[in-house]
Image 1 (cartoon, rainbow, N blue to C red):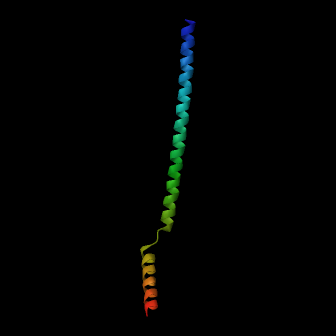
Image 2: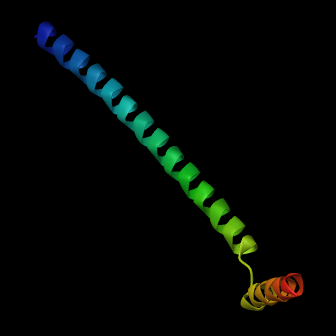
Image 3: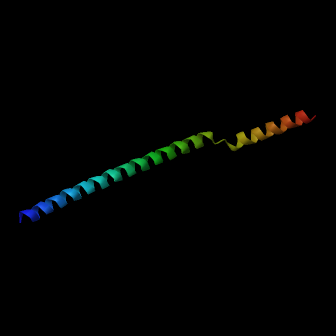
Length: 73
């Protein structure tokens, strides 16, 4: 009887350690996912700030065309 209880206790301890390992791995995975999401959010914000307006782009094209006409003449 004592041997069986000792064996069950050892198995329980082993299972608890395995569960702790799984929980730690899950926490690391969640932290990595959150880090990736934060990086993507920062990238999106940078891209939104860098996006030029249509009128700004059109103005650059017109200025470039005017400069080219001046240089050609």
